[in-house]
Amino acid sequence: MSDKEKDSVIVHASEVSDDGTFFEDVDTTGAPTEKVSPLGYHVDWISVVFLNISKMIGTGVFTTPGSILKGVGSVGLSLIFWVIGYAFAGAYLSVYLEYASYFPHRSGAEVAYLEKAYPRPRFLMPTAFAVQSVLLSFASSNAIVLSTYLLVAAGAEQTVWRIRGLAVGVFTIIIIICLLSTKWSLRMSDAIGLVKVLTLVFIAITGLVVLGGHTSVPDPGANFRNAFAGTTSNGNGLATALVKVNFAFSGFENAFNVTNEVKNPVRTLRRYAPISLTIVFVLYFFANIAYFAAIPKEQIRTSNQLTASLFFTAVFGTNKAVTALSSLVAVSSFGNLLATMIGSSRVIRECGRQGVLPYPKFWASTRPFNTPFGPYLLTWVLTSIVIIAPPAGDAFNFIVDLQSYPANVFSFLLTFGLFSIRKHRAAIGAGRSEFRAWNGVLFFALAVNVYLLVLPWVPPQGGIDGGDVSFFYATYCIVGLAILAISGLAYVIWVVLLPKWGGYQIRQVLEKLPDGAQATKLVKVKNEDLAEWDATHNERGDVIDPNTKPSASTTSPSVTAAA
Image (tube, rainbow, N blue to C red; front, side, top):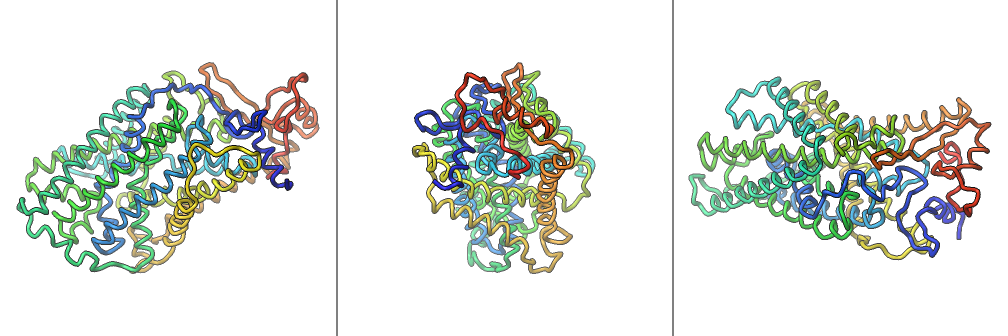
């Protein structure tokens, strides 16, 4: 066995039983595994389905068809892009399923999986992901769309500050619901998810009726004749369209954020997560057919965030119908935010439990309502700021694109990291996992990630100001990379430079809270005390029992040296 392979074994030594079986236990780095969830077990198979559905069906299918059509140029390619989006989501779902089969007791999905896939340099990946998650942990886009549709449904004037004020108010209500009870927030998410499905079923059936010529819509097949006329070859437009499609499917992984709150998580997720994704794809595809049957192509292209309203206006032509649809879209947006907050709160909680955020107990605690109070508070503050602060106009498209770009970087790393996990398992003689993605699926996911990272830099046909915002088209790419650079800089200063200048090294200790929650706390150990610390503590930070047989995980390698 090579030195590199031996290091891999040591990194994961705490995950190997005496007989060589690979299992998930309290790892020596990152957040400790909570074998019994302090948040309870309220997530059943129904909630798995609707957590995913409610996050996927939010505003995307009602608001993005125009942007997608603008990016690709033709109706035919627009529909193909929805199929590509489904294929990519399916491929990436298999990545999540394989990780979940390795680490069934870890919630937070990406944050936990990246920590496992890239344990060295120590704390680099948790730090980078935590900075990105905190800086971009807002849901302003969907809150603004929700408030817009509420005003349309109420027939009220849509001023900038009326939209913003309503967005903050409704988002505050959502946070309060999630904060007070996980059980009831899940039940509400399930109920609204069912309403979403029925809404899209209604739109799909209405579209088929339109195609059959049974409404007042003139020439419903016009957009489908020469369906590929106007197809663009511009890389930036195609990449932007694919970003929007991925945004619409974003949420297929939401149930993985609450994995530790699911009984029999691997079996449940393997069975019901693909079902939720397929249901949403079918509904999305037929909803787009309905839009193209009822609305002229050019109107869809310029519809901004109100494509669905144009559809109901074209089909029913009455204010009552438009009001009814706007109400349904508002309910859908409300459910989307509810499901998103349930999942994202667990992501932030895991970041805090890793010890890379200040006050890990604050993030890990489930008091006073047996819900993650700290993450909900952070999300509410940042979302309110982002809703109020940016100038009106291009903020929606820019924020969607900005949140997508760093996420694509981590998506690439997550997929690539599976090969490392598999190598580690092979080195320790572990058996085959309960779920394993095909290599071809992984390479497809990597290829799409590369496409999404490279093509947005290609100038659009209208020049540097010809994107879907009125300023430089690649601004969101630059800002996204800047956030990642800030993450790297924070790591270098915190883990490398400050310990070197201060004459100490970083070690970790396990903190257990009265509610059963656990977190890692990072502490500073002076260089002169380091030998004694390492002799009396294992890498987790627990005091070593002198009667306990030493193991590979009882050493505490230098963080600075590893970095």
